Image 1 (spheres, rainbow, N blue to C red):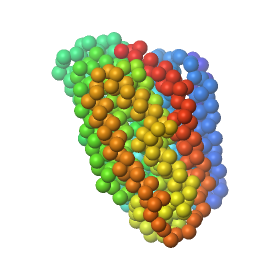
Image 2 (cartoon, rainbow, N blue to C red):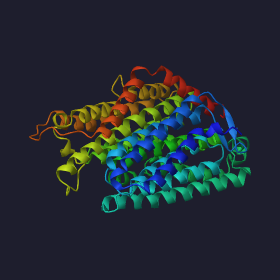
Image 3 (spheres, helix red, strand yellow):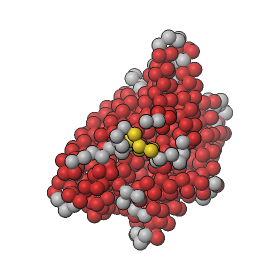
Image 4 (cartoon, rainbow, N blue to C red):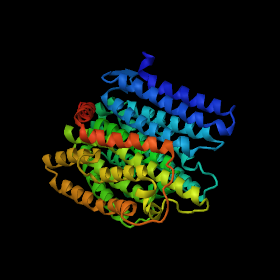
Length: 482
């Protein structure tokens, strides 16, 4: 076996352990270097992943596969991890637990990457739990913040329930097919067609993945967790952890259980409609920007779920392309919120609601780079042309229409129009409502992370062809298993 196939994962393991050990022996005021070391490790892993594009191989008795699909999502996870580590440099400034913060983030990313490469349900489940256990701790990183602890507790309880449902569903699939190998299940899934065991397995797996992706009605943990967690952690959860659920669901349903398409396709259509509509409607009423972004994230998950309904190569490619675009957009939006939170807490340490939309009043004057970046992110999430969000929606919605699901595309387009209401509200507060406050200094790590995200959003929007081609290549891995 060629260990270079796992050079990205090995790089992150080595970096995570180095960060943890070095952090034990240096004083708190010198721990900023750990953030730079973590970011460097992510860049090395990203280099190894990009340099191995086009590689196709399996390892560990075919339980792990390296292909276009896994490589695409690995880059999604590494991009989000890079934004997380860079912005975390400022967030952890002066924190004695800095090494734990970055180590947990790196190991969460490793878990996500193994899910992307999983060719066996057991590997997939173990990768899920590695990422989940790390993010449970990150959600409650602010131990003296009641909201952070509440976020971590809700996330842990609901996450544990979803893991149990997922594992029970896997056990039914294994009991019927005699294997946990994804290609093996696909070859033997006919025994589940029309059987009660097959229906129960689909219901359990949809519930388990529904929690991970935050589809309504399995979403109840997401708004509270995203709001209560540190904004930098919310970026990792919304832009990274959710994509892990999407790639896992693609592997399980579109590859392993494609024979049961009749059982789950309609269910995904219903979940997509309910999720995007509920997410957008509730987001309109929010005054907390983080909570607004959380419900927006539900709506985005609803759009991506359309790929499970249409199931054409173009739709699957569009859903995969959307995952990368959303990673830049959503992570950037939460990091911009983190910058505003930092400003508010710097001025008033006793503030209990630093992400309230009133704190964005006059942001264009006070923090011009943050305000401009946030404007790009929310416009991209709304699907404004020349952004990654527009290209993602265009591909996904047009493929839905071409496949005859015109009703689904119309609902999605209407929901996208509704979302402009709350996205424009943020822009209104930043640029059109007056403030007497003076301009403040914008923290460099947050600014760098936002600029990287803005470049990603605009680059994919202006020059989308190579990324679309790459996403379509990833979709071929799924189509080949259908």
